[in-house]
Length: 98
Image (cartoon, rainbow, N blue to C red; front, top):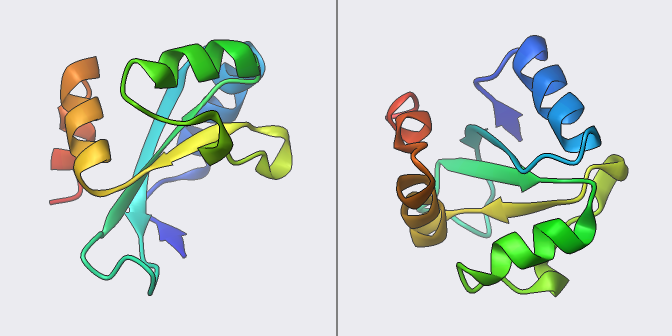
């Protein structure tokens, strides 16, 4: 279940992904498989090779890409989420949800 973002934020992320940009979207997220995680960051780009190359610098594997709804993206949770957001200069996205 996702919550904590509005339609404009989601639309903006989808537009950026569709343009072939690496785009970040963080929101609240509850999933029984990850009981200690309260947020997820979706890092998407419709240029899959660009997304794969971006992910390699953080040890992300191409098979982890979610191709849901024509918006290819990595779902970052836990230490991956925190470390990558800090490295990319988006740590404010996590602070919004703490």
